[in-house]
Length: 237
Length: 237
DNA sequence: TAGTGGTCTAGACCACAGC
DNA sequence: CTGTGGTCTAGACCACTAA
Image 1 (cartoon, each protein chain N blue to C red):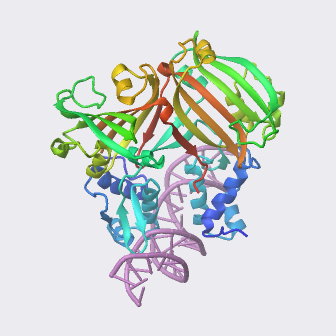
Image 2: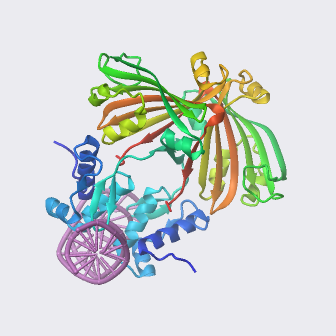
Image 3: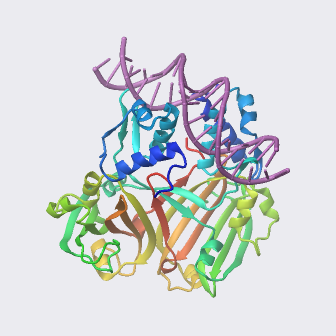
């Protein structure tokens, strides 16, 4: 009936996860000890350990030495937010994507910049617009630390959006996102084709690689055109 | 010099992670085979396998049978969004939290409800307000499926906010969040103490347990008062 | 077909926290 | 002290897939 038993540790993990999600094992319930599960499933301790380890990572259970593993109680809602490339977002809506470069300046960073760079470090400042069909979809205002990405100084960014360019030129990155709502200013309203003061969803992203600031970007979406979706699944798949 | 070697698989994982984040191993680079790492670290294959498995889960590497493990190229920005209890948020700002119940209705669900319940199922509808000091912090509009949480019918929610109450009465839950920006309507503006049309950050959350709808809530924050932060770390710690 | 990762075993020692 | 989870070993077989 089911296509389940692809691997034993997954089966164990899913069995236990189902007990928890269904409420049969309430928060605080003590899960069978590893050695009990090895007997129950007729397997070695490593296998159940792997299953329990994944449940613990997912936050479903809490493991305590000497006392056992317990169903955790839900704490803060944690959700995985996927932030896609803007071109992908637009095309997923069935619209034609177009990129427009508005301004490009090289200057020295100030303390007011969100990048977290020492004042005086060279930065590239970009302003651009992402179009969906004939309508403006998103405004982008970006700083790039030229110390971290010197090649950016030679890139005009006239036809390539800075986001995709950076992804292919910077090895890997940690990021922090801040999401808020504001009213459109005059310039933004005009560029987005909305009324001044109209609600906008604003995503600010700061990116580091190996602890060094790489880029800071502010994306402004007309409030009605965009939303973010975040999901939480207790154990993936 | 370092306090590192608490466990070998962590050391291996962090070593490789550092190579990737620093850019020394660019996207597409082939990571040493498991048996090579086994020799390099003088350990068994399970240990390196665990390390590589965690890196793969974190999205830093991609594992391909018969050809090896490779540094992945960053795809969509994935970030973990933590959504805390509103009382906690307010108190973290150093303000006094207060909860106000505005309305409480029991009715039958309609197709227009976001809950995803069959039409006609009994639901509890709540409207309430979360205060920070003397100012309104957040408006809450909530539906609770009484089939899933029958005890809610007996709870007045006059002094207990539905969020914390649900957490302690529902075993575990999956959730989906949608974040957007809107302009405040008249009623909302008056309750939040802002101008009609002023930007608001709106979080809609739908919650299930074991696949059954439990609750749907819309939280409306005055745009200037609130923001969400999401972080991404390539390998935790 | 050969070599990779995926999974699993049947042991082992250890640190640690509750008794 | 005792028993738990945390870690690790030195093997093994398998499925898959790139060559």
